[in-house]
Image (cartoon, rainbow, N blue to C red; front, side, top):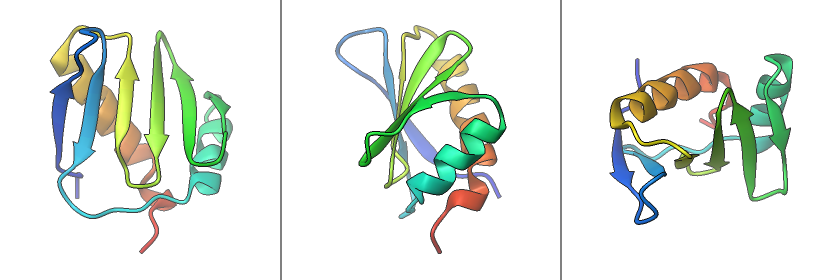
Length: 94
């Protein structure tokens, strides 16, 4: 089952915030493991994970919110969010 989310363009114009439409929690240690296993460069300051995927930077929070930048295309942001949420399905805290 795909996660439903809302995409909001941030005022900087080159970033989107992705907000899950359901209550979700992610184990950030598990998120870090999954990303590193898939060769995604990360920084894990504790309350969030910053990851670099191709030419964008993503910030992932425990509540499932993502911030993706720099990006101009809403459809691409949606595609990246779907890819990330699929990848992280085993990092959800039930």
